Length: 142
Ligand code: TYD
Image 1 (tube, rainbow, N blue to C red):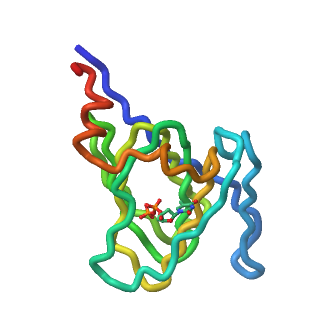
Image 2: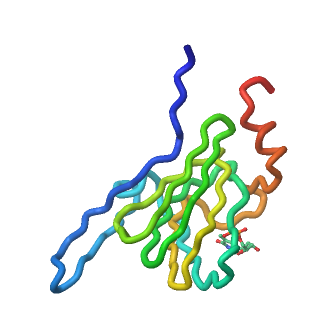
């Protein structure tokens, strides 16, 4: 029997503080996330309820996504395993997505802000934007 295990995972940051003064969640490179952070970007202002983002996989880039306010649904697919992960209400919980995972995002609220930490600087040649090409790339029988 072949064992399958999703390559993505949740990252739990420290949540320092209390409800009166608020909380602080630090991220230190290579310890709180499993890579050296070379890029940070934000996704926000998705006003169309049908908005969909992502729709690609990466060759090398590792990322952790934090939904710091609002909500979002991530749909993950490594060619073998699929999972939907809903994020919101917990800014200290991140979603680690390694290379080779097709990911899309939807179900944004007006207030949604996603903070993404990435292992590589932006490079379009690191993207696979065709699902067929992705499946060929990850297929164990190719
Ligand atoms: P893309 O990664 O396709 O966004 P999403 O997956 O959220 O739909 O990027 C959208 C555009 O922004 C695309 O033209 C590339 C550009 N971009 C950068 O210039 N730098 C970056 O770090 C990122 C993530 C995207």
